[in-house]
Length: 321
Length: 312
Image (cartoon, rainbow over all chains, first blue to last red; front, side):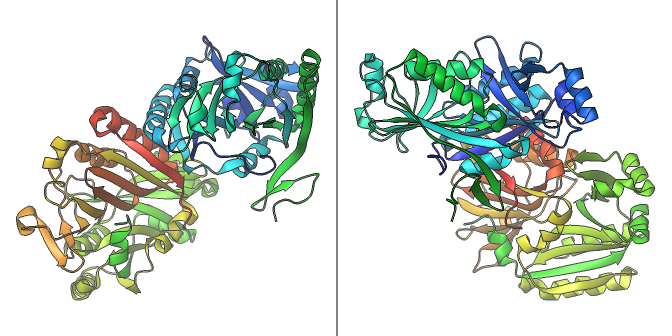
């Protein structure tokens, strides 16, 4: 786990680019930066919160752009929302999420293109192809920029840092033993898991790599690839549910969220634009307020940078050599 | 068998050159430019298209050319489907292709008013190729051979194209339905083969080179010409009676698709295709595949790789 590459649960990766006439996308082409965004997903709405960096605010044209787009200010950050209620083509993203092994790595806007970087298991190549063809049609213009082996954390950082600094953070908790039967099932074996996407209403949709598949309840864990020990399940602890709810309340665009359970501790890792870094600590603090007995440790937090073919830990020892 | 099986067997390369008189050749001469191009052979014509880096669009003459040829732009490259080539160019290239069995047209470029065409061929045809070269030198003014020697391999050849029009490697595969296996090319060939298209064609006729895993029985009856018995290398006119392949090639023609390394691999019912496509044309290529997938759902078309051509 961070700062090293987390377990690549999906062996394949795709970057899918679409163009559309959404004014934000059209107008944003003028600026030489990319915008990170995060998906939200409810039963009646699919959309994105675009993280609008403030560092260009002094630029005259950028200032006009922000005013014209009526960007919302949340704390010290600026957010722009695109929803399927205004742009029905966004509904197509639901099809992507329905593919059981898909996990969104990162979403961003670059050169007027909406780009979605996701990983998946090779057994779903046909379903991913179908999604690409359908999305191309509903957006009017789209193509895969990449389909091939999963290139892991370094590549996610390389792309994400073009929209600003990226912080990787991790914390560990001791999951309480007195929770429900379902929790006992969750913690019956060691695993790593990826949050498949971010959503205000659904923060429990994961793909797992299970260490000992014989010990799990196959009613709860749906097999994706028995050979690679990959399973899908909608299961998590009340603590994580609260934590992720708080994260959403702060419009925290956390992405690439990986969790690891080693039989004792649960380690939660994620990437986040640096300007939102403070909200992680806030969310943890509020979670601890609700669960005072919780043994929480913030174990890692650092700006990561990809430069000259290696991943650099900005404020720490060089781990790449 | 690997998808580059044909490339490894074609041991020779030749680069022809001839001077051009089209307006586009004129301005490459005046401005000392080099443009990479795509070419499509038709029955009675040769159509050219050009890849033009956008920094050149600042030049008024080029801007007019781009506007007149309805050029499309993706990233920082324009793609202009230019139209007909001169008669000399058409005649020369057609002879090279028709009078030989193994010559594969790879890339055409226009540099300071001169056209260059790079082809690969099998050394068993050296005498025939010499005949073609001598014939063209007599008929076409300004015709010359710039290189004749070992084939450095397609990756090295495409390096120059990649400098101008970023190339994407695209692989996709289909399951050939039982019923279709009874038609050409599946019924004529063996259960395992690799094929490379010799050139891009605007018409429905095409010529392919194919390497099979074992001897084909009665090759002549099936329209196959044996080139090398040890390699099981044949020249083959791909009969387009198969609606799926016909649909695919028709689409490529309609969209003026430019493909490099046009290979197909067949292995017991699975057909895999590999091409290198200029980035500027990737949307159009994916759209063609999407249409094909809708029209032939039983073929279960699935993409398997899209990436920058890293080996270049």
